[in-house]
Image (cartoon, rainbow, N blue to C red; front, side):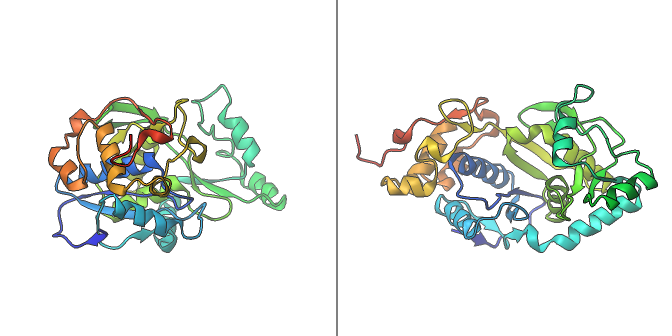
Length: 311
């Protein structure tokens, strides 16, 4: 499979991996769910490579190959964030002109200490540099401190509606828009890219739910309608933690080395969702988003995906 051409349908879903390494079973399961949500609601399905940070040579190509191998197709060309820097600069300029930004000179250590302080929501930046005077900013520049650019948020929380979690209200802080090294930050780029791609449905892991109100608020400031959301349960190891290479055969290439096939991996993913299917086409015919398991899928050790015919 791969890129396909379809008639333009209103709205789109998407999957946007970071090319920092191989996709593991959890990534593939989330991609399958994002594809299913889009295809069963008449939406286009787009792929975007979030390659502004932690890029491993060749990883993006392998990720796309793995997605195609398990039966995921997509519409139009793959978008690479590294090719969209002018769009992020334009959005930042718009926010600066509207008075929604300020420079932040905090070091990484200072930010970590501030984020764990008892006077604000856990992980929220408390606005240390928000009220610096021009003279104070000049002093920090003279000290050689690089300036990140932060959002001057006018709310402390924001509510979204998630298809699986219902109404969810989360903290909104003065999030970073552009890092001190000049690279646009994820919370900005995802909002800009989703709007530019006509993406009105976002399906992703539920570990990202806490950051979603920030993105929805930023979308509002930029004049974009927030997409509908569905934050799906993750795949965890036996200890209830994120998957890692030490957890065994967690990637498609690992499974192939054991003699399993992409169809076998897709079948195991379907089984974890409560379905019996060997292809995405079969899964699409029976998929019901209201029946998604509410708990994480705990991945068994290496022997879970046994090739057909093995005991």
